[in-house]
Image 1 (cartoon, rainbow, N blue to C red):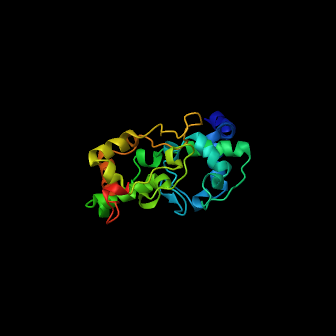
Image 2: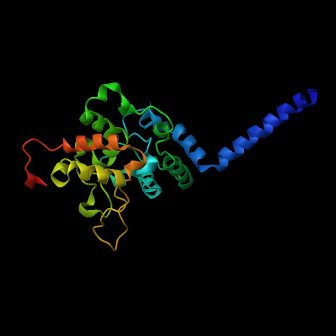
Length: 234
């Protein structure tokens, strides 16, 4: 027993060095450290922790590709001129680590037994309100804008933007909309097939949300049609 006790500090030291070496060799761990050092949680929430000035990033790695994240972090305002996020002028290696970390955020806080913010009892009896909360929390709002107003740029997409959703009730039945959300749109139509494909896409939400949750989102979207709008306003 004395011999074990004598060597235990050495073993602990070796394990500590091993863990340290692993973190230095892991781009996700390095990116997490960058995220913390720049105090990104002051504006962004991850799994319910952080600020609300910027988009919730709990699912950012699910809904955004590494290619888009890299382009965005290189210069946010080159993609969207009126965005509040400044250019941090990350060095290439720092940006790559941050992309690795953000790309790893695929809803672990919700999928691994964490409380879903839209599961609040106050929302249980109102599917439209519940759908609105899901729309905001999972990140639909980051591309389709508040109340589905659209306007978010998407390179080489038809119309140059992510579609607005205010008149979605004119183009889809509820069941059709639920199906589309569940399956996603992996490859949005390109305005020019000879140019690079659009970087933004809609992921298959069936991998994160159950059908009841998607139905709530559909109910919210179907409610967005402005009063007085006619079928010809598409």
